Length: 152
Image (cartoon, rainbow, N blue to C red; front, side, top):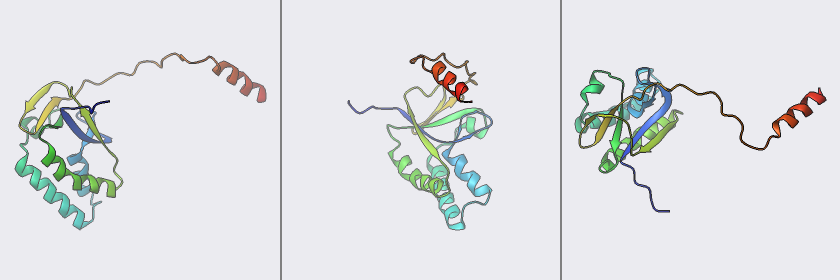
């Protein structure tokens, strides 16, 4: 199979952001560790350097500044330098036991901001979970249930 090509990548954790109901992004995850005084001072200093570099090189979208319900994605076509600079932050997340995911996509959602390095999309609408799907496999569940009842 040929190598898949994706336009966008997002680094997010398990904890949901209250304004988007999406996984918090890498910067929010690291700042939480700083604000809760979980990081050792040397690690906090490292993260502040990383964040400073991004503040200097990555535009801050107005939607993020206004704390609108949006989700940020790096563009993969020219994110090599960004990803190189974010790796130490990922190391910090691992060091402090914070799981994260790299999400790749070609369809991030409705784009409301774009610059050289990133796009910002509206947060997806809240999804409602459908009822459980009917079993589609062999119907041996009833037999197992009967056997369990007979054992009691």
